[in-house]
Image (cartoon, rainbow, N blue to C red):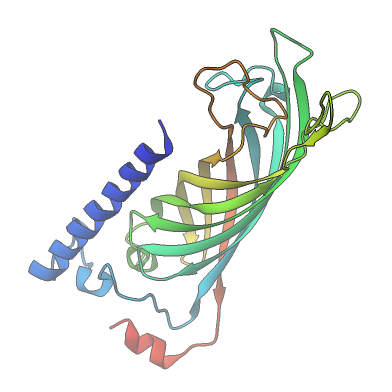
Length: 265
């Protein structure tokens, strides 16, 4: 599935969510969507988030594993990729705009190691750093979490960012981004734009503390992420990589503020 199709699917989902929410609030403010005691008028889709003792900011930290798809190894088997044990660490910050939508800024460090099982000479290892910004859309509004009607909330996200990568030979630590040509040395870029998309499931232990399981794809704009170019491919494609992991999310607590309490009414 190419980037345009994924973008279309995510856009249709957002419009569907807005349409359903807007219809419920505009025509039947007492509609509860099956949640007993919850007045959805208080969780209007475009209403800015406010809480008397919780900030709109939260931070997260997590661990996971990474895999990639390119010339050496392709999904869905990801054969030869370090027994699927390429580690990943992340730190992030989110700002909640509404009960449905948040803005995320996140950075991850991850390593990759892969060997082509049909051609052992085609192999690489790389330490990588990514940073991206994204829109996160919760399926269950935060208001229902804070009212303890729900503890479990799926979500989707999509955004844009950049990645630094440094593919090297496994044995000699020689850069695979430098090619010795007949007349000159060619050095390929070790950075690329990325388009992260994915989904996750969040479980709330408390309205300010949750754990999430998340998986995502990073669509890059380079074919040298692994240091190898698909020269003989009639339909060359840029490399992609994938991250799946677990996070702890903590929403920052503040002093009680009465004006924020009034905004929730």
